[in-house]
Amino acid sequence: MTANRPSTDALRIAGAIRTDVGCVRRLNEDSVAFIASAGRSDRDFGALALVADGMGGHAAGEVASALALEVVRRVYYSLDKTPSEALRAAFDAANRAIFDYAAKHPECAGMGTTCTALAVRDNLLWLAHVGDSRAYLMRDGELTQLSDDQTLHAQLVRDGVMSPEDAGKGAGSNVILQALGTRLDVEPTIWKEGLPLRLGDLAVMCSDGLTNLVADGTISEFASKNPPAEACRLLIEAARRGGGHDNISVGVFVVETDGANQAADQAATKRIQVADSPTGALTAKIDAIAEG
Figure 1 (cartoon, rainbow, N blue to C red):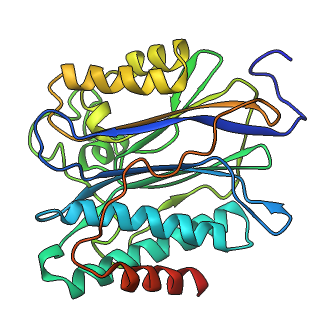
Figure 2 (figure 1 turned 120 degrees about the horizontal axis):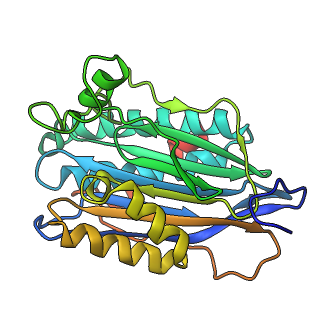
């Protein structure tokens, strides 16, 4: 079958996702995860890929991003709902969990995290997004950004007040308009309808530690010309050569037929102990969120 043609066969995404502390920061406040497939009973709930870029006080960003990924993953796979409904419930739960955790732990006051998720089920791609991490789709050699940057400058460009050439320069360039956990009225972007996938499509996810230093053209070139794991490595190296002043996360995924031979599912690439909370207490809290 020719690549990038609509397919009636069962499709899946396979690939790699990595995170790197960069060249300047001491802590990595990014968290990433990829679950290639997960079933419950006799139903396959499909794949889920996540990138979260945390922010806050000492180590608080690391707590926020890790908590977001764990809650989103648990809630998404616990609900027998459409991907759109499950993603909304998962993002709402993650937002509340981070907000509540910060309220109970003064050292984490003000923490939050971006969160971008791609879910694949029944040959359809779904996006959920808060913040300025990004998701792209590459089809027929063209790289298209699926997510909208929720930053002050990006909004000014969309409103016609600022030119794209001026965006990212000067005051306000790093102001994020929304992040999980910073307030209770966060409104994530959740696709109501899934995007039909085609054999040979490529999906790319990343934090702004990559996109602030690596151009879309380079992302497109490395992702299309290398296996996913190598593409991730090369893109991280490119960001580090550009200064690596932020944490760098990137995932590259290819759409293939379900019968293709692939490595085992890849879980979170970074596991941390969440602040000083006893692991059992945190697990119980997440379980309670997932159950209801």
